[in-house]
Length: 241
Ligand code: SAM
Image 1 (cartoon, rainbow, N blue to C red):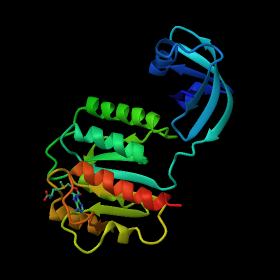
Image 2 (image 1 turned 90 degrees about the horizontal axis):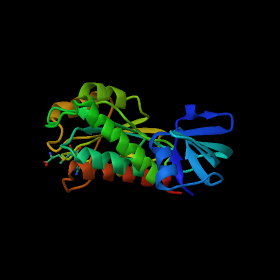
Image 3 (image 1 turned 180 degrees about the horizontal axis):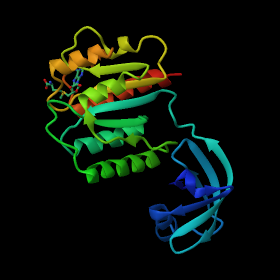
Image 4 (image 1 turned 135 degrees about the horizontal axis):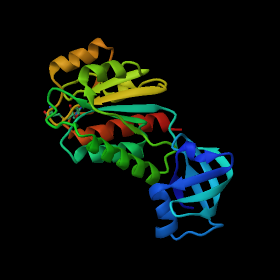
């Protein structure tokens, strides 16, 4: 059954009003009709089964018949603090981390980040990619793509998680596996450097805020590979039954 994202504010009692691109997709692309069944998602963890009931110029109405919590959302709340890489790597990172299960993606202006995420249009495009990836992977929520922030602010924010991790390619003692030994925490933050990596001073700053420095193995991974690898390994640990 087709799956469409709506805002929770578009639901009153048992009636959902589908607007924008989703309404166009239903009426003009899929040419769906009154009586057809759809699955709606409010992007906040709830799916609704509904039946299309009314078509107008700019919207489609649907009568909700049942609702359920999204079973696709991971228990662990994963936030990635990503040193801003050269585009379009960040688009790949947002798309893949959405599929893997991240709840928040924060671009970080680290010392060696050569790219700047200054244009809000770029951030809006990343948010659109997150929405599309969430829909494709049947997520119950759309991960938040934050505005870029300083490394200092990122480290402070990361320290609020139950576990804050910074991936450092020069780390030789602690592996991600060791950092994850024992029960998986409820919230985990992961910091990944840009193409040029982290400065030593940034690693020190992260240490001061109780971040765990970890290695992702003996090979140097591209920044986009490191993000996807780190989150996949954490998700594997968290969701292994
Ligand atoms: N300084 C690296 C070099 O010598 O080429 C470049 C940094 S790497 C391309 C980008 C980021 O991925 C790093 O800052 C780190 O966060 C992560 N990373 C890559 N390989 C890693 C590894 N083996 N262990 C831990 N982190 C790694």
